[in-house]
Length: 618
Ligand SMILES: Cc1cc2nc3c(=O)[nH]c(=O)nc-3n(C[C@H](O)[C@H](O)[C@H](O)COP(=O)(O)OP(=O)(O)OC[C@H]3O[C@@H](n4cnc5c(N)ncnc54)[C@H](O)[C@@H]3O)c2cc1C
Ligand code: SF4
Image (cartoon, rainbow, N blue to C red; front, side):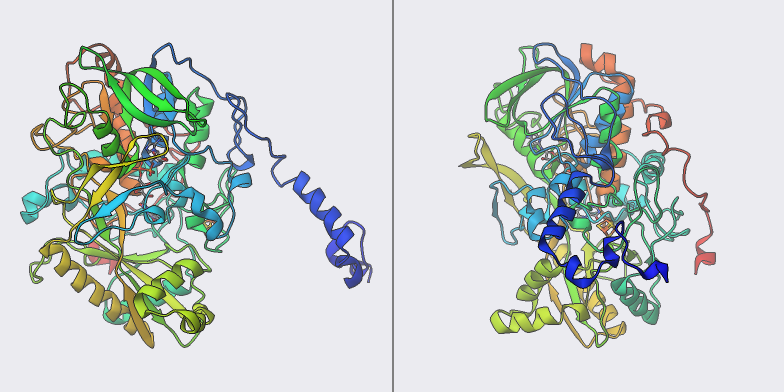
């Protein structure tokens, strides 16, 4: 009986009148806000950045002087930049990361709300053109520490071995200057560092298991399983996705309410802000946020001296560095190199090949939406949690090269309304009817490999940004192979949606995941950087982000970009003295430094089978 009596310590048990009393509510709110779970918020101040409760580090951030040269200066602290800085700092180098956006405090700055999360994206002016212009803004790059890894969905499949040999195997695109086997150890490391949850057996590409268990299925995942199973298509459930399926260290597990693209305030989804940046700061890295790098300066010896950047008040500064690594994303990296044109590099820094900005790629990202009689409630799960790569490779029976993946996407209401506006042309009352029906819809995404073409490119325009820097112009055209692939892939997803039991199916064409623009290759006359990201033209200038990818496969690129960053870091550490002091180049593979992983990640996870024959998986 006592247990049902109102208690002073338990407001939930109070009578109705008291519980609704505004004065009591206000007092309760004040108390709650002053003492958030995990600690009291502290406003970060210059030079003393403290991360919020989720990302807490003990101690303050180191500050380097602009006058003295740091060892490595990294432009952009996103998916790649975060991993790179963490490893270089842990190896004992003086490292500064320049980030154009803010240093997020996930507890204070983020909200579980679509409209309130637009600040996570790079929405500065960019010009688009071409026959099939890309929509930019919220559809691609991030801005702020963590970059795109803050608003990514967390899907983390590896590229297939065939992706590294596209030209040799299929006669289209390009080969990478190294093999899948060279990147595989870094895939394994990053899958532990994020970590990636997924099935014990992932049958495609290089078959493998995931270190953390799969997620339970949401309504949209169930629909994909139903559709694929009916058609005899193999499907992966519960991942691979960089979201915690169980709590780990100070990070709680996923609570399945679908705000992954809004940053994940919970901290269950991996972003470098949470997984790598705290360790970088602990090991002495400085992250200079709201610092927009506008130009890379060369000395008379044609070596980089440092970068010119603008602080949060728009004041100009110069930071000296012994080596500079660009990690600003597929558009901003080529833009910065072009804006750094100088005598000897009139067409853009490191552009002696004329390929800078070219071979930009986006994946076909058509969204296919199906209405079901029963409620689906697609928001009640991470959007990314089930997929198939059954159509990934070139199939000689089809009339196009390469292939596609199919994944759950599950847009929240604002994105859903936009898809419906495009797909059904609804507006006004029609839109209201559709929105009232939101819970009955499921959405699958096509992820199709568009090939690298030299006319798909970043150039710089006449328009200027707030710092007076010319902005990027992004030109995009679909070619014959791309169109055939999209048509076939889209029809296949529609077929799966109907097989799952949808009564009505509509689709909206879209693109996803920009990469390319500073491609890597062996030949300096047809690529910008070598196999470790060093520009062919300038010995102490590197690129380490999605812009170096020669082809893009139809896997989401984030895991590959971070694995490449860990590999580049190992190379920089091995070759540091040579990079700082001479123009000599060594392309010997560095040792894999597993001990540089953030503590508590390497060696963790549940052992999973790595080599079950494909026949047994069926
Ligand atoms: C909605 C959405 C969902 C996605 N979901 C997935 C997914 O599920 N799986 C997946 O693999 N990928 C996903 N991606 C793609 C993924 O986020 C990107 O491929 C990845 O973040 C790119 O990494 P990056 O290091 O090249 O660039 P970014 O992560 O974008 O980092 C670049 C950073 O550099 C900074 N910067 C740029 N220029 C300058 C400058 N001049 N000075 C200073 N700083 C600068 C930027 O502010 C930014 O923080 C998604 C993308 C979007 C938009
Ligand atoms: S669904 Fe999971 S990963 Fe996504 S925002 Fe919610 S808690 Fe984070």
